[in-house]
Every structure is written in structure tokens, then in C-alpha cells.
Amino acid sequence: MTQSLLNLLTVDNGQAAWNATINTNFEKLRDFIKTFASSIATQGDTGNPSSIEVQVQDADGNDVEQEALLRVRVCTEDALTAHATATIAAGAGTSVAETITATKDLILKSSAAGLFTITLTNGTANTADLRFGPSLVSPLFADYEPLVQVAHSAP
Image 1 (cartoon, one colour):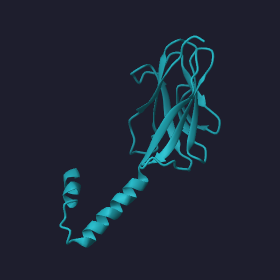
Image 2 (tube, rainbow, N blue to C red):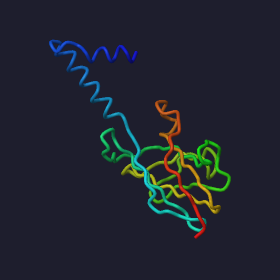
Image 3 (spheres, one colour):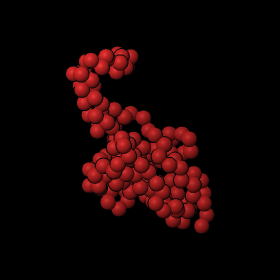
């Protein structure tokens, strides 16, 4: 199917209707694609939690101001195994839409501005990976993507 779609891109320029249709479809696809920009807003340590922010963006990197769902899991470094000591919670402006595994695997609902705030607590000096993906309610995204590694050390 991909090859067929690519072949459509090489339609002779005399085929104006085809070109207009292809361009329109690509514009619709671009508007549909959403990405996530993440940052560590507050770096914590073993005595203080970290705060991580995730903003929904469109394919061009512009913030999307709408509520969204995000599945977040705190894992061991470089694995999908639930972290033994680290926990996550919804931060300010973010709510828990569903709990998969308490404090380890959550579906979060963003603010109306499309911003998620996640609180990561880890009382042990080690690294925790946050992995995320649009809520599995969306069949287009089935895999977790690395969000950010947060290393906690003693204060």
C-alpha cells in the first residue's frame, strides 16, 4: 500500500485534479498527527519529587490547546518493567482518567491547554524511565515511546 501511495505522488503535473486531491489529503493527515514535547520542569532528588511537563503539539510543533489522554508508565531503565521504587501521579491541572496499575501505569487527562503535569517520586538513588503514548484508546499508537529519564540522587 505504501508503494501505491508513493506512486500517486509522481502523477504527471497535467493531472491537476489528482494533485489537488493528494495535497488535500496530506493536509488532513498533517492536521491529524499529534506529537508530544516533554521537559523536566523540576528536577527532584530522593527527598523531593520531580515534575515533568508534556505538551500536545501538532505535526508542525505548535501547541494544541485541547484536552487529550496520555498513558504513562514508570519503568526500570531501558525496560518496560514497572519500577520497584518510583511512583507517578497526576500533577497540577492534570487528572487521572484511568488507573492501570496504581502509581505505576496511568492514563492521564490533560488540561484544556493540552498540558500534562506528571509528578515522579523516587526515594531511591537510581534512574526511572517514563514511557508514554497516546492512550491505548487510540489504535494508531500501540507502543510506548521513551519520554524522559529522571535520575534521582541524594539531596
